[in-house]
Image (cartoon, rainbow, N blue to C red; front, side, top):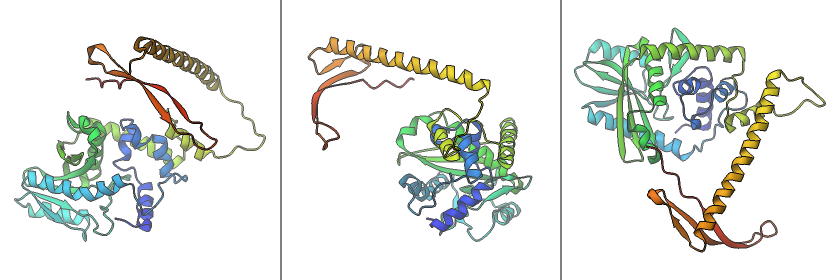
Length: 340
């Protein structure tokens, strides 16, 4: 695992490029936990929002890194390939040698630094803002050079892989293929360990139409970074936190004349606030009626196997002067079934 100093260097390097993990966020196809365009923009400019270079990484990051080698080995085993390590050579030199030798066997080519766990940065010479750190390269005598992304995720994300790899992972592979095409890379693959006991993999061919759209949008984003033009904030609490960091203090006794858009937004905010109040009132009315129907029963089973309401007695200890002891019945709403 990398040290704090190595983490600083890695994050500094990431600021200079639009990486594969940035692409789906900028394109608006990434899940909420991946971030927002505003967050990516802020990181690229180093506006005090880059991750802290702590030596102690979150456990899911640590284990994702540790299990990467396991996922690569699984892919190799399933495809009759050997895993070969080249951490002392550049990707250009290694891949050039594979093309020239035209080896008859399949190979998973890793260039992971054994000290830091990092893979080398590859930058597209035609777009120096476009770079990536492929987990591994692949050699197939029939298909030529490819690349492999090794993923790990928890069991809650199992369904996301039922119909193949999620779109935001596929976008990352398309980004990496485009970044590395000057090295002769012409296809990609995804391999994922889910919940520690389920394995999924997919293969990706270059999608010219998608790549064209992606490049246009990423170029526009990078120009905004260079010109320091802030992207519009989205609806997430994460963007609210970033805006607070971008504008941490007010100018004393300062006033601004807001545009007409602000008036429209204010009226919309009033309307939304009223809708929230109405919905909260309706929610309480629903709960009241359920309590009337349940009377003294602890559980109420819904028809159609929709679930069970629980209205049971609970006790709560008091905490000094902050919270008094309490005892009473608490109504619990059934968990909503997931849509098929």
